[in-house]
Image 1 (tube, helix red, strand yellow):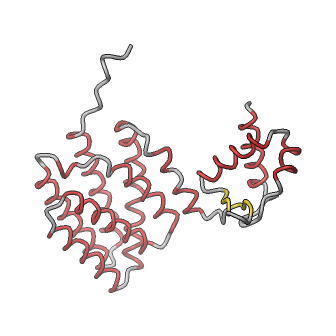
Image 2 (cartoon, rainbow, N blue to C red; image 1 turned 30 degrees about the vertical axis):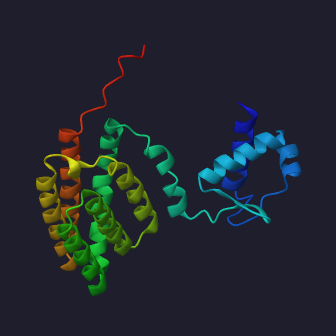
Image 3 (cartoon, rainbow, N blue to C red; image 1 turned 90 degrees about the vertical axis):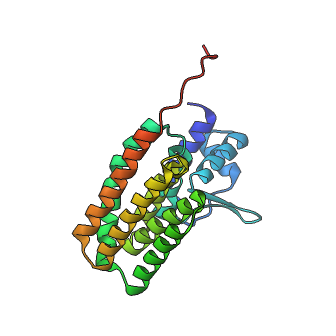
Amino acid sequence: MSAVDKAFHGLRHMIATGRLGAGERIPPEGELCEELGVSRGSLREAVRMLAALGVIEPRHGSGTYVSQLRPEDVIGSLSLTLELLPLTGLLEVYEIRRVLEAHVAAQAAARCTPEAVGTLFALIEAMEATDDPTKASELDHRFHLEIARIGGNPTLASLLSVFRARSRKYQVFTLPEGPELRRKSDEDHRVLATAIADHDPVAAAGAAQAHVAQTERWLRAFMPPVEEDDSKG
C-alpha cells in the first residue's frame, strides 16, 4: 500500500467510525502525519482525493473539515467514475435506472401538488416548442429532475441525476431519426405527467419504466460501440 493510500484509508476509517464527525474540523497535519505514519505530501494528496469525493471540505483560512456527509452529495460524486463508462456499461446501468425511475414516479404521483403538476406540463410544452436538440435535452433533464424532486428523496434524485448525466452524452435527438424519436419521447412525457397528475402511482411507475426502456432501445439501436484504433498495438 502506498503512503497516499495509507493516508486515504486512515482518514476514511476515522470518518467511517465516527471519530471524525460530519462538519468537524480534522486534526492538524502534524498530528495526522504522526498518527498515520505518512508525510505531509501524502496526507495532502489523500485530502484532495477525499475532497473530490465530497467527503472533506478544505476551507481557505479556516482549515479542513469533514463535509456534512449528506447522502445526496456523496452519491453525486459517483459522476466522477460513472461518466467514464462506455456504452456497454451504461446499458447495464439502465436496468437499475428503470427500477429507480419507476419508484420515483410512483412516489411523485402520491405526493404531487397542483403547482408541481403545472411545472411538469410547462416543461413538456417547452420541449415540444423547441427545435434545438440541445435545449430539448436540457428540458428533458429538468423534467425528470422535477419528478425526482416531487418524489421527496434527495438521495434518489441525486443518483438518478448522475445516471442521466452520462446518458445525455449520447445525443440521440441529433441523429437523422431525431425528430421521430423526440415525438415519441414527448408522448411518453405526457403519459407520465398525466399519471402523476391523476395521483396514480401504478400508472406513473409503468409509464416511467416504459420511457426508460424506450431510451435504452434507442441507445442500443443507434449508438454503435466505438471502433478500436487500428494504429494501436
